[in-house]
Image (cartoon, rainbow, N blue to C red):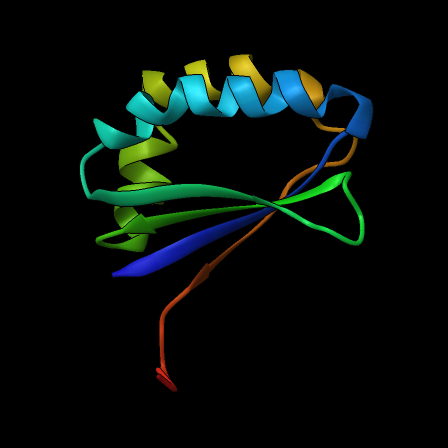
Length: 99
């Protein structure tokens, strides 16, 4: 499994509706081929910053299967207006588990 991570910056005054929009979109990810998990984390030191972490079977499941789907269009329509900067997206794999 790989993880997509997206660093998101929003206006912290809009945090509640943003978080509600992300929660409402969870079924889009859950239904996507190869999607295994989805979580949103808010940074404590800077409440305008979030980390979206999504587990996928493969990069292709994310970049082709999801990004080229209608579900992705629905996701962007629901949350895109909250972004004050372009999301920074990367893909990661676990290489060390300490405990």
